[in-house]
Length: 140
Image (cartoon, rainbow, N blue to C red; front, top):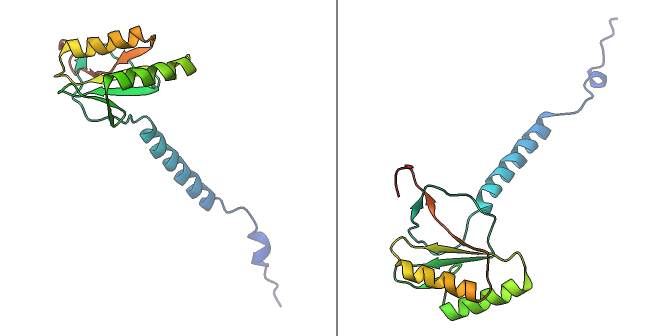
């Protein structure tokens, strides 16, 4: 009689394909979640274009100035006095406090400049202006 090899003894090993599937799913999950992490919550405004732009670290306060001159802290409407008071209190607690102004392209320059002056008078030194990168370097 012929003896056949027992196949169960030779099939021992690590099943690697489920591990590869799970690694791929984790990779896709982390890619998708990090793409959404840099989103800033503000009301929609039409930002002016600029040729010299840089990505800044995330700001503590994101202030939107709509075309009608109304102010929003994140997505909530706020008065200029309340905004400056909240920003001043936050700046007193955190030396790395920063504020970014998302001014609509239709907002008069005086309104944004007035907000910058109020921030400076309140002792808030790290203030930035948001802009979209212009498609053409000749565009102003």
